[in-house]
Length: 546
Image (cartoon, rainbow, N blue to C red; front, side):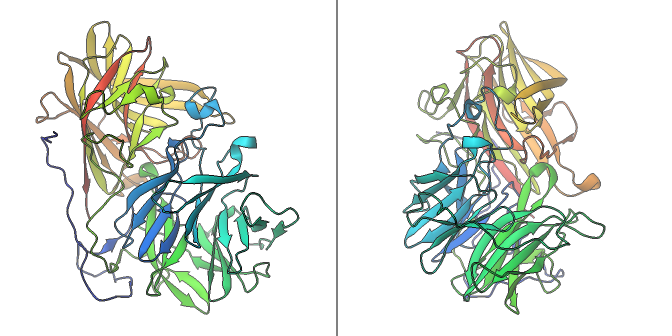
């Protein structure tokens, strides 16, 4: 049904069919090659990764906090092309905060999920970054990574935890700063009395030490953690604690201390092997407005330590590809909304109101209805999001405004705690298009919206009920640590585009508020009465490749 007026830049790149090659870093003089794995491996908001391999397939989980469904599971054959194949849970329901009522969970919710495969089953352990019962640790399991996932148990909170199955089938959780507890064989709870502090931080560990990832290799235990050392000449880094007995004693070594791309030092992640015995490190880096992206590095086992990086101990610019016939895939996708179910590339901002959206009431369109009267976009249910990607990307939507009611707001946004938005507003019977800069202040404890400000940059009256809205995003490093620029456009015919509003709107990452990268967001909310809706015909996405 769908005919796109603009060509979508989605290149069909097939990786080379070669014999098994040990992946290795290339030197900086290597000629450009579209088949290379170019760092960042994923230039998108994919923080706190855990990666495992089952057979010839890699699986990864990441933090998505207040977005629902949560805890995405991504799959790859080559560590280059990733696709989302499931979510571990559809929604969290312990508090009305998850429904954007009586507070919010911006920057909280699901954090740092641990993923394991044991005796034919997948297991995931996660603990929302919340106080009290909302922060209980969940364990889920599935026969396939693609789901369905079922909950096994809930127990006390474990911060940045790692699930670990030992060779003797005993099960442990590592968490906090060097803490460990054993779990019951059925994973129903901890075994009381098994708590152990397996190491004490040394004098040079003056900052946070967290992000546990435990693996076992050649009979030894390796606990990887991110170390934040705040001192002159010291930087964020990845450290490893090693022992021959799970209970210790543990010795420590810095296994990666590397900046990358002129943006700062990387830290937090894990290592994973291929079926041919090669090892890789997947470590994230803070990159401003786009969020926390992933780097890929070779791992060299030196004196029994997994040293991450090239021969200089740095994250390389490029890597040789793994053996694969996999075509190019991505975790951000165009969508014509022709399917009966919503694609896995989408996530809602908090729990959606299920009755306030539809893919079948007008086949081929996404219908977003106003399900609640709110004051601003930060409290609006059913805002639908996808990540932005670097180095630069662009997306547009076509939207039918015919059924908006007085007081309704709908449109397309570069969504974060500071948001640039293309907002169509209906006042009486008149429609206007505004480019606005939005900002929200949240209560520290409850994350309740205390204040939401809107600065209208430009307003254009509309005399038609269908419009096209576009956002271009540029995350290429530049001045002030990164360009992080968004520009906004509209079209009345889907062909001719006109710029509107701020030039190079600066997207920002604020860990105190949303703690996430900027997202493309589709929205429709009511400020006076519910019952209105918009129909979105298509979301067309393109990414600039290096």
